[in-house]
Length: 362
Image (cartoon, rainbow, N blue to C red):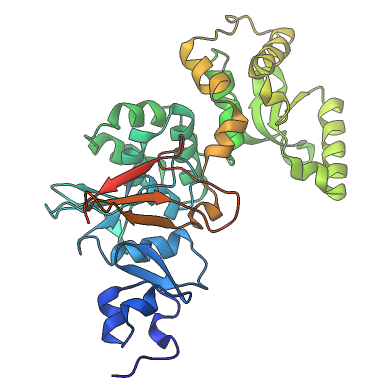
């Protein structure tokens, strides 16, 4: 059979195996050419296809067991929640065979989690994914799943109650702090910053006032102390119209004798100052509770892992725009697989901490 001079139409946009390529007349030498990119061992894609989470999942489905479902952190990512490490791609399967291909991790389970379209439910992914999240990221995951409508609080509760894996204690602890009206990861972080230091818990995203006397909606509201705490992202300052609306809103708060505290990315570099500022405002309004306390857990969550570091370590839409470099050692015959990058200067990591390499049999 003559070798095709153009890429077959059904292989132009999707990953494919070496066997599938050979069935269409493509040789091994052709696959090593500039028209193709290796994604996994024996799995290729056209070189002009942008790598994405969806494409990686499609590639993985060619080599994982047939009953495998996307689960754990990868499941959260598919559901639109950007917490935890982008790699490895996580699946669950009842098949007892080991899958030895980086960057895949297939958990062998006795019973598959509830799933739809080959992806475990959001609540199940939350319960399992908490095994590899700290408390802030775990609560953020729960808040975002509720905000995005991926599941209900009752479904989260049921999934956590049923979960028996190693992430069960974290899932239970996080669930107790998940709130339905929290709308952004930074809102969640600021709320936890205050609550885990021992301050009262504010209500999330509620309208202050009623009817014609409504002042506006606040991110975190202390009703009994006439105090609003809000996280302000840079996009507010980037929009003149938004900035004017915010100024009017601040005037309305002041006219109604509500104090307003803004938390910015710069202020989050000094998280204790944020806590003390809110505590001072609460105390001035009559709060007589205990002063904030900053234990080892609080220090680890908010000072050692700063907000900026947390944001840098969180996956983004382009976190999967990378490839894996495979080499075979001439002496041992073992295959070394390391992560590389499509865009220059970007060196992603496996597991979220430092450059890593994995060795796996061919």
